[in-house]
Length: 280
Image (cartoon, rainbow, N blue to C red; front, side):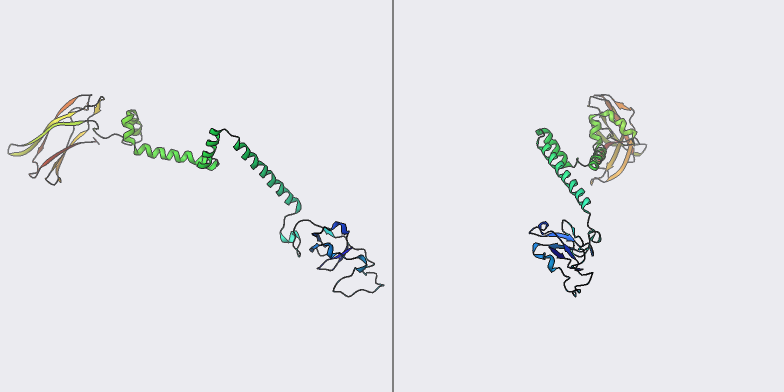
């Protein structure tokens, strides 16, 4: 049987048994055109002619009856009817097979992983799901998480430095080495029996604040500077004074008497406020 290229009209002799009912893709060896051939397209060899062209004379040596028909190239898979795979940028069959093998291997590996995950014990399965939820299955995240945790720990250790040192006083030296104050001046100390009165000396008005500093805790506390403020009836500060205690620290249960004299106090003084401040 014969078939003809729809582009260049070249005729080919082909075995009809090779053409399935749903057709077959072939390529013209002359113009490289790809077309589909079905059993209905096959013509008997005696009817071989070039359509839409003038029939050659019977004695012409180049007539279709006298020339040896070229062999048609069989191809598989969908192809463009006008261009070759190279012209259309399509992958060769060998590369297509390689990609197919890669996808098949990936599919097998995925099935193996899924099967292995299903066979995990419940604790390991929960841990694996947790890793997936946190993104720890990614190598980038495994490097990123420790950095984030360290930053959060550093920020937390600074924000809660006072609470940390209260629980672990030995860490105060670590904070001091980093130039961070982690203790509140005079924390734990108390003012007791504080009184104040005005008096004159050499015709100069004075105000004396007296009382005690007590240490009710079970550990020794360094004595900071005592800060005194004179306030008016609206709690506006009128005067202030700092005084360093005569002792450097108070032992557990100890008391220290204080007497602070302020010369020429403001006449509008209504309240006296005492607190501790750092020596620096």
